[in-house]
Amino acid sequence: MIKHNMGLVSVSFRQCTPLEILQAMKKTSLSRIEWGSDIHAPCKDIGRLQELCELQNEYGIDCCSYGTYFRLGTDALNELADYANAAKILGTNLLRIWCGDRGEHLFSNQEKKHFFEESKKAANIAQDLGVILCMECHNNTYTETLEGTLELMNEVCSPCFRMYWQPNQFKDFKTNMEYAESISPYVENVHVFNWEGNNKYPLCEAVGVWKEYISCFDKPKNLLLEFMPDGRIESLEKEAGALYDIIA
Image (cartoon, rainbow, N blue to C red; front, side):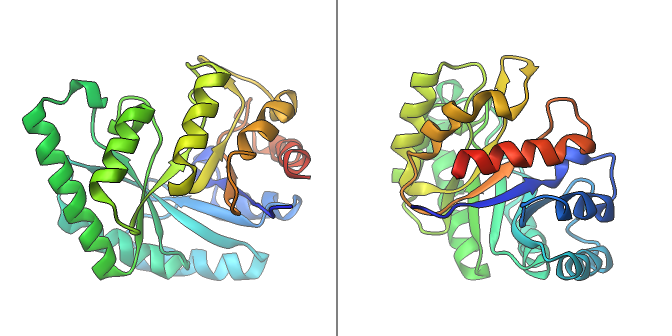
């Protein structure tokens, strides 16, 4: 049986302090965290990053990724150095980034060519910095469709240029399964939630569906809870229990 790791995305609780988040995690079977660069772990605040590292050690939680809001194709590539340095302080070499500012079908041929060039440059920078860039699998970005993602991965073709996966809440189960199966070789982390359109539901209601989703991955992944159905940190223990049922 594949032993997936269970964790949490810190932006699930932007209203909480890192200490409150780690204390809540301690009550669960979650052992990995993805710190967000927007609130909890700003990339240039070295003191705060070092404090987070100490807190992680105190609570026995490992940082499995650094959730940046760097947007490929829009932000300057030289900004990656600060994000890479922050990730290393936290103890990870994985950086989650956003992939463009619109869907691939909205790129002209010339814009697509330029975007691919920027992506290759980013992958080379990541290799020099000793980190791995992971594209967010998200609507309104280049990786919102399977076709766009495979095209990009094949074009860049770098071990430092990888993917996240998450189901698209506006697509059906069959479409999401096809996406997961097809990009499985590129996936490092998975964001886990139970959404349908704009509605959020408890993860326990989708255990069977998620068992199918994770069957697409033949190597261990970090399965990271992203947001609670009610936004409350008090719900983390129940959501973590559902995640445990999925991988059990």
